[in-house]
Amino acid sequence: MEKRLFRSELNKVVGGVCGGLGDYLGIDPVFIRIFFILWTVLGELGVLAYLILWVVMPTQSAAEAGETLSGDNIGGRVRSMGNEIGEIARQPSAELITFAGVGLIAWGVYHLLRRIGFTWFVWDYSAYLWPALLIIAGAVVLLRALRRK
Image (cartoon, rainbow, N blue to C red; front, side, top):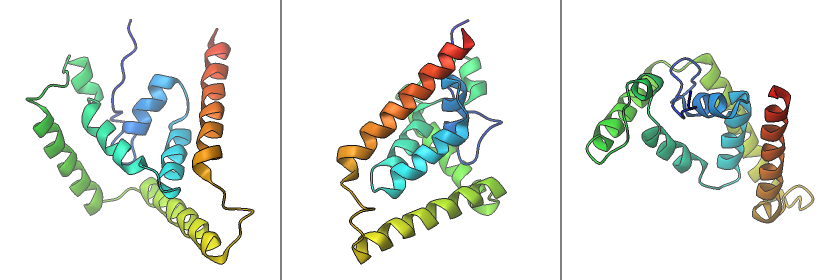
């Protein structure tokens, strides 16, 4: 059976993107959530990438029904995303509050240390951090694949 990428309906905090990516890659979605938090904290386009994935990736039930992305259903997916965000804003889960709190604290500490001038902590992250994170992520995926064989 072909492995498909979809948003998880069971393992989700916000939209199920990280849960779906975790299922697809065979890793714990918490690592993917931490990756998106770090990506956002360090000033990159983590939120934009997450929102794009939210629209592009079908839900698990839609993927099983054979739904594909087309120009006709993009508007419906965006409306559905807006409805889900509204529901999340009305009733946030404890897990979402925890991840949001950790992200806000990390973001505050990072920017405070930059303002104070701790250059030993703040580096040009675009030059070193993302290649290092990609290497680590690739190693985790490979180790998971090798363990299954």
